[in-house]
Image (tube, rainbow, N blue to C red; front, side):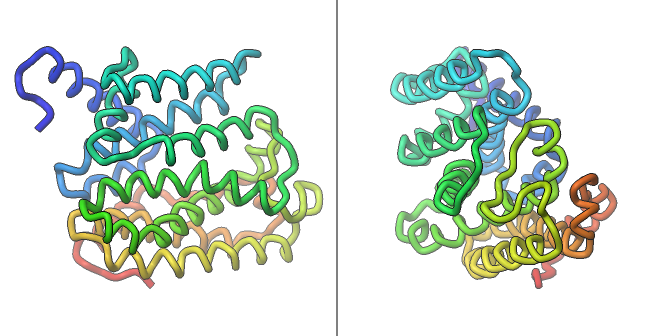
Length: 281
């Protein structure tokens, strides 16, 4: 589909290859999930993940005093490239081809960059700010993927709520397992309850209950996804559900110093289970 012989097609194919490389280098679990998508969908999911990854890198790893300017430039360049259909950045190039193909526009791109900007100068999160951050940083990414999964606007609208809750659940799980690194390395505390110093079993339990509610809503939507994407999303759901169970069993005090993980053998076992049609709990 992506390689038809012209020089531009070669560049586009190379851009998708670059997005795949970024995805697999940064996330083994997500890389495994993508294997279960119908082949025609895989490049587009790689493109979305690669794009949001490079924006994350601006706010998470780049330490220059011009971080905000760099992020703003990336947003402006992406929106300009979306109009022209061309970018000199291969990751952006793959993303805009996917975005133009599946009607992913500023309504989803703008909130994403708004949330990324919140990370440049961390401030305490109240509930409103917390929900806005999660919407832009995670829910819209789930909605971008849902655009790829569903060719019918009616199906998209039907599953939109579930996709949002799934993205929110994943982000909150990431927050919970990355408490130590976020606080120590980046100076961030995302939850609107407690703080790094006051985080305890009561706060952890409240956060987990909130995540479980998100997963429950998302679970109903997963079952209604097209076959071309259902198993892949199911695998990511299983992975995060298992991770949440481990977080639930880990003392709050330990989460302040340790990052809970699922090893590769367990990930492969989940892949095998979902591949043969085992349903999630």
